[in-house]
Image (cartoon, rainbow, N blue to C red; front, side, top):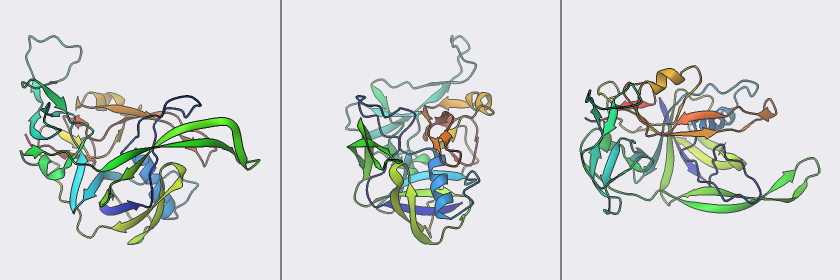
Length: 286
């Protein structure tokens, strides 16, 4: 994999399948975005054939702060409540009690400790995936709510009464995005690209010393370092290998076909599986 560091010039805008309708409250920010968003940004910045769908493979989406790398925490990990988000990590184990009643034919994640909260969707140092240590809460970005209005591009004017609210993210000072892709696709060592909604600009630069990830071939549970598409073709296979996961739905507009894209379901980064289901997965410490 080839690693690049992305530095936004301003805020970034990512959203899922929730429509931007007049009068609706602002929706939660979708970050990290599905790999298809980054793949499209890389494909366009590298001036690849726009008539073809991007073939870019995304191996990881991380955040970088003070030369340390952070990934979405596993949905099978917990910390004690009332510790301001810091404290010892408790890991889910498999419950194989044959006397238990369950609606699924799969290992059941369980934890003995009481008064704990899940840290899935939070960002943690990747070094914790290979060793036992304490989780420490960090601040990486803030949300900014923006008002917008629909534009009629034929008349080159605003649409009357079509106001909406959108939530953007602004990375904190010194925080950047690190992505792993399978090829350069025409990108240079550094340059600029548009990323996400509203064509937000980022600078990019190749990372000379990539982050050291834990061994991805050993272990019983595997963590997704980027969202994974739950396609119709792989749905049964992936669902049979889920240990602790969360999903989200996205939709969008196909600029090449000038039509709506079909809605897609993705497993969030931080989802945990019982097998290594793709190059986005690394083994968790047991």
